[in-house]
Image (cartoon, rainbow, N blue to C red; front, top):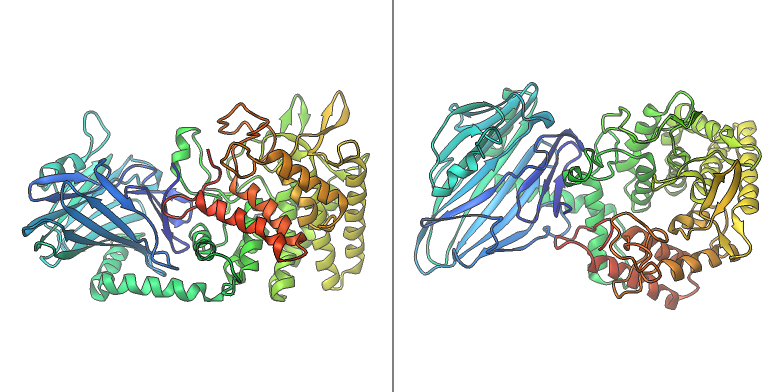
Length: 618
């Protein structure tokens, strides 16, 4: 299950699940060093002798965000306990501070005492080995630490600060964790534990019949005890209510640069546009890495994750954010790519958020033959997105600072990494990272990257290089029209694969062929583009009532149906919107925009309850 709520500020990212439990804490890089690792930091309530964790089935939730902000807006109801919780979570816009506000509404006819229990289940620096959890008497808090990662927990209600606490062993021998100690409403008060440890703390308040009271809880993160003590004091001095209010105000101002005139698009589409901008910000590290996805649940399928910066994904997102008016947010991404570019001029498969090369499944040798384990579109699309950003914003200082160490080197590599017999880029892995060959999408992206290189070199008066890059791009275009257009079917092939030392067309219908026009190889109204996109619309649309568009025919990834004629694969949000984008670009009048409007509405209908969009739909 994808995380339902994400909040962050560019150096800390916190994910919460559908039960409002913290499941991931990333620090000091977005996407790197997960200090919870998908475990459950539980949240529970004791009401007049009855206890319940919020994961129990008698809770119902309304999940969302305060409008146009990265502060959650949650209502949790429990009729058995006659209580309603109104919850707001936020990350300070500047500091490494997580804040939580819980308004307890007593729905019973009598005054009652309530106790809120917060459980801290950390795996500091990604491991449970060698952690310490302890009570700190100087400021009456709990803190966890290991090496240079410190976490301090505190809070208060009208009745005062932390009432009870305990630390203990978790997931070792028969110990489940200190959260079990909370279920009788009383904590044993153990003041320190080491190793695989957790902690639980509680706050109390008395709420009159039909009334409400507020409890605050927060976490400060830093490199040593003095730093988290200072941040904790800052919260106390400022008051968490004011800090949460300032977070909302900050993000509303942050969104002001976004397009506000969205015509007659439905309000829910406009809200999703603004929420999407905010969500992208949470996944973007302030040092440049635009991380693909941060959700440890994928570990149950494969002992790896998606907390990496794929240059392709980053480039496409940077392009979108630039178009939306957020050039300053994504400028560090291009510097990140320049710093991580290989000496030969290409970008590797993926990177960790700190700039080191990420894990990979692309081999250097296959059946005795050497192979460069890259995807050319990852280098090409960074150049393509950078040029589009310059055209929009005319900030010449950015490409000038990247000219020698990214633009020239990247374009030179693309111009040399060519299969001479075909006048096409050499084979590489496709954008889905599933197969090896020469792919139409990749070819189109290399064309776009080389043209970006030609435009930049011309911009800076480097005319000889500009002519070379432009000529190579034209050669690739000719090779693409010769080898990848299929006259018999009247559309482009997905690509070329090698069989018995011959290149043969892979005619699998593939949604990524949108790149032919999007990356500038052919205009959107070219008959070959139109026939290809119409074939995708006809052949990859889901026809069982669910709607949406699949990646390609007989997509195996999480495949749910064997009825390939009607369900070629699960519908993907992005593939559906690629068709919508084509319809927008080729529209001749307002009536032609009805399809894209429906596609946007379809995407929103298939969002999680909190508003976040999934990758694909069952």
